[in-house]
Image 1 (tube, rainbow, N blue to C red):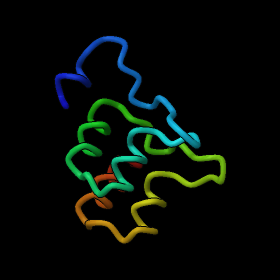
Image 2: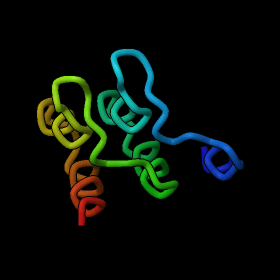
Image 3: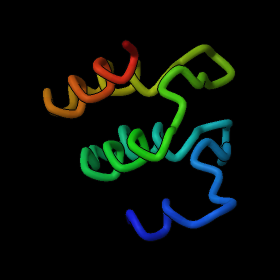
Length: 77
Protein backbone atom coordinates (compact mmCIF):
# COMPACT_ATOMS: atom_id res chain seq x y z
CA UNK A 1 0.00 0.00 0.00
CA UNK A 2 2.71 2.47 0.98
CA UNK A 3 4.58 1.72 -2.26
CA UNK A 4 1.54 2.53 -4.36
CA UNK A 5 0.85 5.72 -2.43
CA UNK A 6 4.46 6.87 -2.79
CA UNK A 7 4.35 6.86 -6.60
CA UNK A 8 4.15 10.17 -8.46
CA UNK A 9 0.77 11.02 -9.90
CA UNK A 10 -1.28 8.96 -7.46
CA UNK A 11 -4.58 10.72 -6.73
CA UNK A 12 -5.49 9.75 -3.17
CA UNK A 13 -8.77 11.65 -3.42
CA UNK A 14 -9.90 10.33 -6.79
CA UNK A 15 -13.66 9.89 -6.63
CA UNK A 16 -15.13 6.52 -7.36
CA UNK A 17 -18.77 5.48 -7.77
CA UNK A 18 -21.26 7.89 -6.16
CA UNK A 19 -18.38 10.30 -5.46
CA UNK A 20 -16.73 8.20 -2.75
CA UNK A 21 -13.02 8.67 -2.18
CA UNK A 22 -10.65 5.79 -1.38
CA UNK A 23 -10.64 7.01 2.25
CA UNK A 24 -14.43 6.72 2.44
CA UNK A 25 -14.33 3.23 0.96
CA UNK A 26 -11.62 2.14 3.40
CA UNK A 27 -13.63 3.51 6.32
CA UNK A 28 -16.83 1.82 5.16
CA UNK A 29 -14.99 -1.49 4.88
CA UNK A 30 -13.35 -1.04 8.30
CA UNK A 31 -9.80 -1.08 6.91
CA UNK A 32 -8.10 1.07 9.54
CA UNK A 33 -4.56 0.47 8.23
CA UNK A 34 -5.53 1.44 4.69
CA UNK A 35 -7.34 4.55 5.95
CA UNK A 36 -4.29 5.50 8.01
CA UNK A 37 -2.00 5.06 4.99
CA UNK A 38 -4.30 7.20 2.85
CA UNK A 39 -4.31 9.92 5.51
CA UNK A 40 -0.53 9.81 5.71
CA UNK A 41 -0.45 10.23 1.92
CA UNK A 42 -2.57 13.37 2.18
CA UNK A 43 -6.11 12.13 1.65
CA UNK A 44 -8.68 14.84 2.27
CA UNK A 45 -10.60 13.88 5.40
CA UNK A 46 -13.09 16.69 4.67
CA UNK A 47 -14.14 15.39 1.22
CA UNK A 48 -17.89 14.90 1.04
CA UNK A 49 -20.37 12.81 -0.93
CA UNK A 50 -23.30 14.42 -2.75
CA UNK A 51 -25.28 14.33 0.52
CA UNK A 52 -22.44 15.97 2.54
CA UNK A 53 -21.38 12.68 4.14
CA UNK A 54 -17.66 12.55 4.99
CA UNK A 55 -15.35 9.69 5.97
CA UNK A 56 -15.82 10.60 9.64
CA UNK A 57 -19.61 10.39 9.22
CA UNK A 58 -19.21 6.93 7.71
CA UNK A 59 -17.10 5.75 10.64
CA UNK A 60 -19.60 7.10 13.16
CA UNK A 61 -22.65 5.77 11.33
CA UNK A 62 -21.21 2.29 11.01
CA UNK A 63 -19.83 2.27 14.56
CA UNK A 64 -16.42 1.16 13.37
CA UNK A 65 -13.34 0.75 15.48
CA UNK A 66 -12.31 3.47 17.89
CA UNK A 67 -8.78 3.58 16.51
CA UNK A 68 -10.03 4.42 13.02
CA UNK A 69 -12.34 7.07 14.40
CA UNK A 70 -9.53 8.60 16.44
CA UNK A 71 -7.17 8.60 13.46
CA UNK A 72 -9.68 10.52 11.40
CA UNK A 73 -10.46 12.92 14.24
CA UNK A 74 -6.77 13.71 14.72
CA UNK A 75 -6.43 14.41 11.01
CA UNK A 76 -9.08 17.12 11.29
CA UNK A 77 -6.83 19.24 13.52
